[in-house]
Length: 171
Image (cartoon, rainbow, N blue to C red; front, side):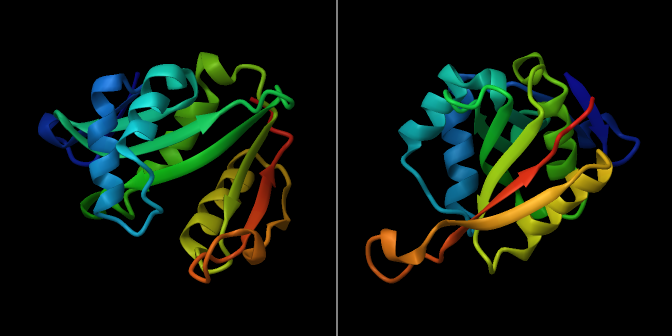
């Protein structure tokens, strides 16, 4: 568990840990109140229960103020795929997302990870900046390439998803 202090008072301290199934509903609520793609509440409960080794929850007191859902792809054991990064609007700009990524990479579940992968839409400059910062922090490369093109999504509402890869990461 890592603590991140916003101010000097304990009530403002943000604590990073692995989520439990009891955190899943709060993750879903955070997403529902954001611009992130909303998955079912079941997805967040499932990720918190079965993939907690590669997920992070950030809490201020008992309130969830951020999270990462991620997993190790079965065919790529040296990578962690970051599915979603969410930070409560009241906490944005305080370095919580970046600190959660560092917490994730330093966790036991990511001890063999050399690469961080994510898909990001071209319009999501904040997420692109987050992963570019991660590459700078670890003094490594970042690449992006076409991955999920717009035509494979149903309807006309979803942008293409570019695949970003950060690494190799030396911890």
